Length: 558
Image (cartoon, rainbow, N blue to C red):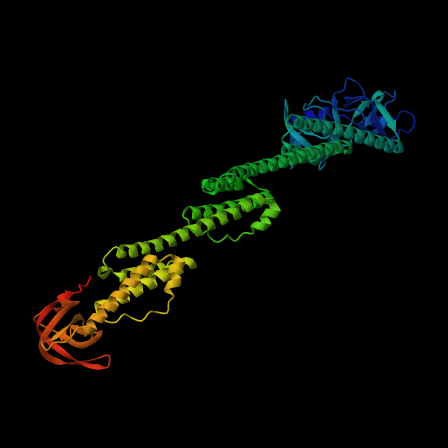
C-alpha cells in the first residue's frame, strides 16, 4: 500500500528551458534571508534561506527570467523515506529505485528529486512524519532548487574570483575591525582596572601580559605595551621611593642609636649606661639591611663593648682587658667615629691609671701592715720582741710589691728586723753578736726615716755585746755547769744543748725531768755521762741529767 502511494506521487523531472543564451555560472545574493524553493513560484515550499553575499551555482533561468535554478545548497533541508535508506555513521544508502526526495516529511510534499538504488545521501537527522520515519538529508546535486532572480547578481568565473577576493578583503577588514573592537574593549578593561588599582603594580602587569597574549591588532598592542611600560615605570619609581624611604628609616634608626651613645659619652665613665647602648645597637642591627650601615653599627657595638669591659675593670680597680680584635682606627676613619674611638682610648687610660693607683695603694697598705707589726713589737720590752714575725711580715709584703721605692723600703726594714733578731738571739744565747751584714743601714735609715729601727738595732746590739761580755767573765764551778739550756741537735739522741760563750759544751737528756720548761734559763746541772756526739767538728759529752738548779738570772723565751 505504501509503495503504491509513493508510485502515485512520483513526477517526471524535466529540465527547465534556458532563458535565451548562456548564463554566467555563478550568482551572489544581494539580500539577506533569501529563500531557496523547490519550484519557481512563491507557492513552492522553501528548502532554506541564505544570507546576503552567499554564492550559488546557477544552472538555468526561468522563461520569464524571474527565477534561477541552482545547485541545491547544503544548507537546504529535504526528506527521504527512512524505509528506503540504510544508515551508517551519518551516511545513507538508497535501497530502492526512483525513491522520492521531498521538501517536507510527508507523502504530499513536493518531490524535488528521485534517487536510484545505491545512491548515497548525507543524513542530518531522523524525524517522525505522519506516514512514518523520515531522514532529513542534504539536497542531492540533482534536486530542484529555485531562487528569485531579483536577489541574485550573476557573475562569470572571473567576476566570481574578483567578487570572492573583494568579499575576502571585506571579511578580512570586518574581522580586523571586529578584532580591533574586541582588542580595544579589552584594553579599556585593563586600563580601567589599572586606574582603579593604582598601587597594585604586579596585578596590573599580570593583566597586561594576559591581554597581550590575546590582543592581535598592532595599534591596540602598541597602546597596551605603552600602558604596560607606564605601569613598569610607576612601579620602578614606587620601588625607588620605597627604597629611599627604607634607607632613610635605617639611617634614622642608626642616628638615634648614635645619639644615645653620644649622650652616654658625655657622662663620666662609671656612670655610662653601656649595656643599654649595646642592646640598642643590637636591636638596630636586626632591622638594618644596608651593609655600610650594618658595618658602622657593628663598629659602634665593638666600641661600646670594649668600653663596658674597661668600665667593669675600672669599677673593680683592676687592669683593663686587652683590646678586642677590631680595627678601631680604620672604623674611626671609615665611619666618622673619631669621638667614640677617642673616648674608648681615654677610658682605657683612665682605667689603667685607676688600676695603677689601686695597685700602689694596696702595696702601700701591705707595707703599712708590715710596719704595723714592727711598731707593735717595738712597744714591747726588748727581750720580748718577736722580730721573726716582723721579718716574715716584710717578706710577705715583698712578694706583692712591684713599686721599686716600696720594695727598697721593705727590704731595708726587713734587714733591720733581721739584724735586730740576730742580735737578740745572740744575747739570748749569751754569745757574741753576729758581725754586721753588708748592708748600709745608715743610708737606709736616712732614705726611709728609720730612726726607731736604728734605735732598736743599737739597743739589741749593745744587749748582745753586754750579755756576751758577762758570759765570758762568769767563772766555772766544780759543782756543774752554769750555762744556758738550748734546743737539742738532731740525730744525737739528746733533747737539748748546753751553751757557754756561744759554744756548745755538752748535750743533755733526761727521762725524769722536763728540760723543755728551762729553755733560756741559767742553770747548775749535774748528771751521769750517756755517750758523746760531734758538734761543729768537736766531740762533746752527752749528759743524762739527774739534778738541776736554776740560777738567779733568767732569760725567758717568748
